[in-house]
Image 1 (cartoon, rainbow, N blue to C red):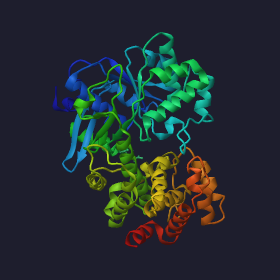
Image 2: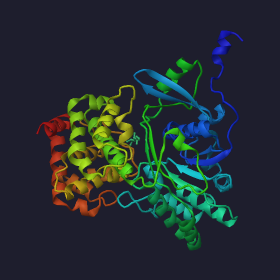
Image 3: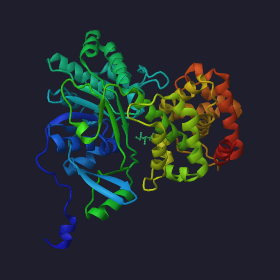
Image 4: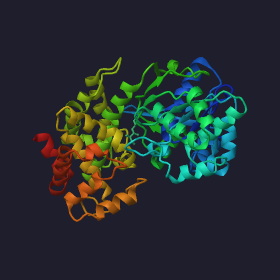
Length: 484
Ligand code: CS2
């Protein structure tokens, strides 16, 4: 083979034989590849087991088109100051695209070899009312699935259809493992699945309540969307293209409630923490990391910063994070076993400052209506309840309100991606002045719990923050707050 031909040789090669499928994973995007697939790869490398993953795309075929031509193999690239550290991941066995053959996906999930169905479908994939976490029966996908359960569209529809098929054939249920950034994601998923099943068949709902386990998890690894520039940089390094590669930080943390009656991969051997309760870890991560991530996303975007690293390189924004953590978020938390909250906070700021990770503020700003309640509003409510004035988080809420208005500080349009984008825009445009806009947005009870929206102290904090953003711009408003 000539050197030129050798240069075209694919470098993705499976080490040893491929594992049989034991997991179906819904939502094989970048985070799944950087996290679930890599932990499972590491667990099998350590302890073996047939925990190969059948990945299911619920909407677009992109992941299938990237992964299947590569035999499911892909490169997981750790980014740090030392550069790119590539590693081939071999846990994905196959990829199905649900809209092409929904009944085939239900059959695959009903296979007795499948012990776990895991999910990274993002907040909106749960079709829940964000403020309450309960199933939204008016959601178009839920309405569709309730009338045609043999061809589901939603994750909950697939789960219930497959559990019904297993029950009918006497196959033990799979474990449902939510890996999304939602509060008490296990119980929340249980509630949604149960509410859906109850609409279909009360005996099935009772069987699910008695037999199916829904462990809660805390997941953490910063994984920006992969760009063409990333793929080109990896191709230079490996001398071969990998269409399915993923780039992420070195840090990873997975805390899992250990409730797997039919077994699980040795994720603990790969560094995951298997515990009896995840709640404190989950709250710490959602409020400290995701809460300040969203804060930086809206205010950083409005200030003209492209990435989180650019945003916290501005000392006032770094100070805003410290203020939010120390005065507003950490006082609402219970320190989880094995964690040190001040050290956790310091490590977070270091992770944000990492310039190798180009995590765009615009990416994190997506789907704010689905994220705000658990990331920011719950903390604000607790903080007000403690008699504090959570000004940094109120500025974050005001930043979101400016952002969803769809016009930035230079008058340019903002590409707002959110399932409620139209409603948010109409709500903003329908208000006659700034105060009216704040009031109209606070009245959206899908997002703002009525008790919080009716709290005059909270409204005043948001009104003041919004006025400051309008008069001083995001940079000025942040500077005033941290110096004041
Ligand atoms: C981010 C998260 O996009 C977002 O909303 O806040 O994806 C965040 O990067 C991860 O939760 C980190 O573990």
